[in-house]
Figure (tube, rainbow, N blue to C red):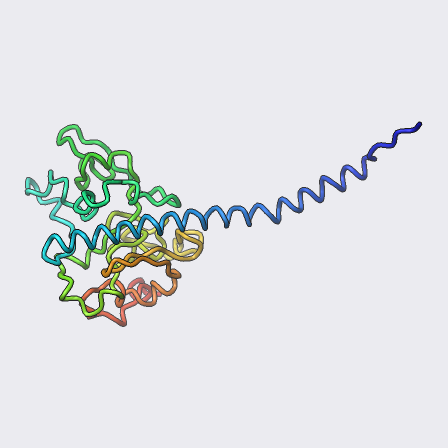
Length: 243
């Protein structure tokens, strides 16, 4: 009885088919993996939104704000609650909610001189030491400085936290391309690849809700979203950078 095996040509055809299927499916798998990361990040940001609402209720409806760092020997230089992330930490008790799984931007390092964490280096902004080793990828809106909830024309349309390239989102300029841009975002950095979540970013609003928005929509509405007094509704990210 003769046994018949595969010919070389048949094997090559099978290998070619497998290679074609892999080329088709791998991008799909990558997109599915990133979608899962985006959902995980959004879930974390919903926790941040809830914690912010608890903080606001406990502090006479005043939102957490960034203290004065770089003030020489000022009181906030060694204040672990200097940053908004530090201020709401007692309400979330988990530093990982500030570490988006799709990014690794600014790590908190240990400063033995102050027994605190500091963002970026031992001279950076102070954090509770529980943050040491955490990549802080969620930024606070610095335009919310000491704002009260009652003073907001529209809490549901005002961003307080967002995907960011730093621990503050600098009026949205660190949000639109959150995996690249800091305070001086260049035209070359404004690419789809530098958005964090498949062309968009996650945002937390002043009423505590969180949602994903397209980067272009955030850029076009930068003033409306990030200026809480609604004084710059027509201000856009693109206008700011001369595009």
